[in-house]
Length: 502
Image (tube, rainbow, N blue to C red; front, top):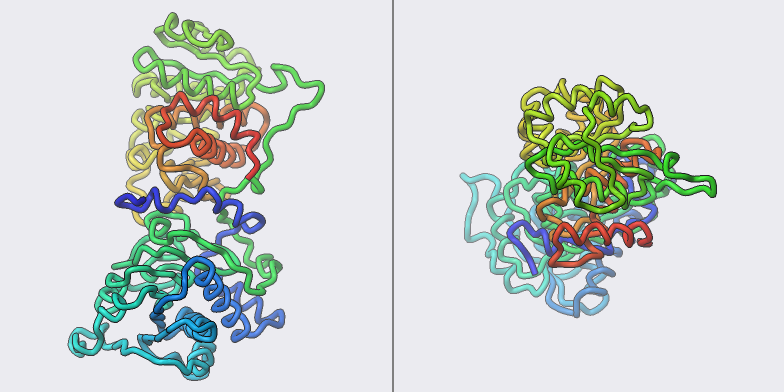
């Protein structure tokens, strides 16, 4: 099953388990440093290439029956891995041909791997990148169509130019693709597609994933993602000090309860409730309760009777915001869901001035459109892409950099919502969430997320950890609830998500 952007086909509830203990995400430049670090620690380039190719060949044999294979090999290390894949599959009796875009540089590891290939080859004309020299008869894209399986080892994750011409046409003709490291055309740092990138059935990467594996649209091109150990020791990460992570439970620890815990020790969350869209504040409040806050109050700026008709454990106050701020135990506030821009414009600054822990959501971004400075002092900001654009400008192709920049400008943790939610801290840390299924895209889900984060903050979690944990739990709850989810299903599923072992 697939959708236009690959959202359904790329949701893999088992990916987190396969990444356990390997949450770090490396840019292509950082991965090159990791490779070099491994060589300095005694590994050889050819040994790493052999291990990478073996990992891909084994993955192919696990997931596909013996079939006709065409390996598309570029001139760099990605192509070198492809030559190893071709040789190892041929040794196992698979019919394999190699089409080389260009010869590897003499003396390189890729040239070593190419020199060991003794099987048949197909033409792959590098003049395709020179329109004046390109002979369309030099290579027939149908070569890929005739193969049962195409191994895409043309370009690696650090590609800086668009994939077009004969490379694009060949990849388009392929019926099934296995990508080495990343599908050609996917930017490993941002997930952007440069020119054309195929939709791979399987992508095999090495040592650590890259942000582009998890960020859209690249994530939708990768298919099933497998991460192979090729002998690079973890200590090469020490000088790299990565700041980008897959959002896994190893990044944070959920609050625990002591025998002496009581409702006040578990924190008091206040949700500002407007008169028009009362459901949004009620969802946020109920989520905060289920996330473990000891007490939750809706500060009703109207429609108090509607709020009082809700769950009996939810407190409702009609006192003015100034009076409520006089109670120092009301440390954590959610401002924005269903509030309206006018009221958000007056209430949000008051909460910041009172030095409260504030989650800014929904109407806060309409209230302060184009004025990022007004959001300074918040603990967590949770915009979706449209709300983000109102305040900070369109995030563009590099959503990770945009979220980081917004966090630095505001001093808040910025949780940029989407199918690939990004949680960015002012200190540069960022996590990309992978727990959310596509059916989480339903009205009210964002209100629940704001409430979950508030409940975790109330129990003492640090802001980035609370936002990351909230995003994970939110997605897991949706996955556990299953397709057909409506927002009310998230609330009971949250309890199961807290106990879920992934």
